[in-house]
Length: 59
Image (cartoon, rainbow, N blue to C red; front, side, top):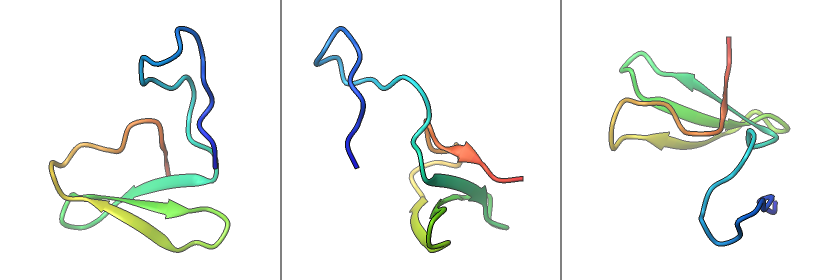
């Protein structure tokens, strides 16, 4: 997967959501990222209890 670049280049920001990813909240209030193609969990955010940036939320 490549990250889209938008001007100005090199400022380390992305416009729009990451495709083929979603996130849901666990019972312990942590956020977990999921690959939408396989349904497998990819990453759990344990540093704080805020959602991942740029990843859509599941209902």
